[in-house]
Image 1 (cartoon, rainbow, N blue to C red):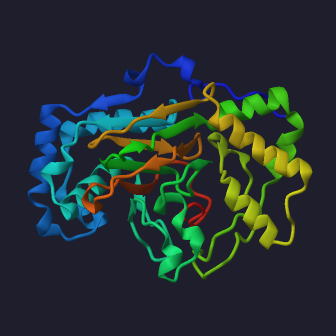
Image 2 (cartoon, helix red, strand yellow):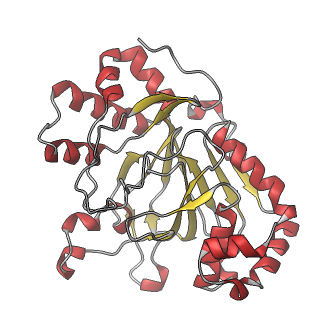
Length: 327
């Protein structure tokens, strides 16, 4: 039987003093430095990695980004940067600027088999009517609630460009606190969660795979301690495709992780405004999103920009190249 996890990554909302605990506001000097660097962007190419390699260091901003990285890797596992003037940049420059910030935290990682380094999180409506799978209208391509999950990179960033008309708050919970609660209340669930599950890939594996080639543990012990990998729908679909539909205790365990991650006792709800950037450690936190009502005008629709990053100096990397939650 595992022991309870301890440390700053094990938290509940009551442990914080409010959003000031996890929010850092860009200073005027930092914004000037960012703007100056972006004036050179057209010289260096159109991909975040190209800009990262050539723009050079941002010494004023480095201290803040180091603090953010510490929040993600050694403290509670998430951080918000506030105050970027997103209306000050065209779409291409904003994408590259965001990639430049993300590169301070780790190596920018592809988010699908096509190698996309940045994805738009916005409501694309009923994609089934355009010859695509109806399931593609869910998740980051729709407005429905997204249940707590992890992505398959070590870190993820969400830059708010535009807010929804109503709703759409982002939720964050400590997966390690959830582990401890399961140990306290339903320890019989830990065995199936540690054994792991096949995850559905919806055809986005590197070779068009349908499911992962092995069971992925929800909780696993590594050199850096306990880490988490979870997505309820991907587990349920993946196990069915593998010919091993979840049995009663497996389903109960998966349901309980989701239930705990959604409780107010465990989840912080963040109301991101334009210019806010939420960074998360996928191995220490679960994140989700409330359902939202959007604006009817296309140029006002809710828009988040998503980056995936892997920490090159961490002994824990992603579970592989598969995009488990890009749906």
